[in-house]
Image (cartoon, rainbow, N blue to C red; front, side, top):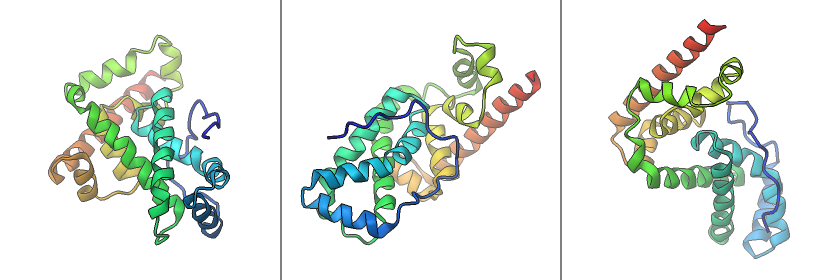
Length: 203
């Protein structure tokens, strides 16, 4: 059913702008999909898959294959949950939150090995491991810099600075203390400033 080809990279816009599709059109399709209409659900997929891909791509650290899997998982979960959708919010908002939660579940499942990446050396290793070398550094932008962050720091940064979540929400979803969420955000911002500053010095 979900056969659309995902883009190789998401749009570079970090603003998290809502889908331009009108909510009423989404709701009509969502009601039909909730009754089992696969064509209506396919239309919803075509409308919203790029935005879903963009957020899970960031949370996945720019790993296209992993992001594609998360998109598919998100829409499978949406298909299963639509019969219970209460239409108290825009469909795009509901779907977006579901996709973020799907990506965070994946992140929590990988958390055991990620915490070894605890200092600047981890960022430096990730940033220089690409065999493209100088070309990658020349083309480095904010999206690529975010992708080099350790997973939990990246997740907090994306959720707080891009998606607009509060620290209490992030802490609840990631299973950490609010203070830890704030500390991870501070860490992520410092690592980004360092990485981007180093890149500009090379120019």
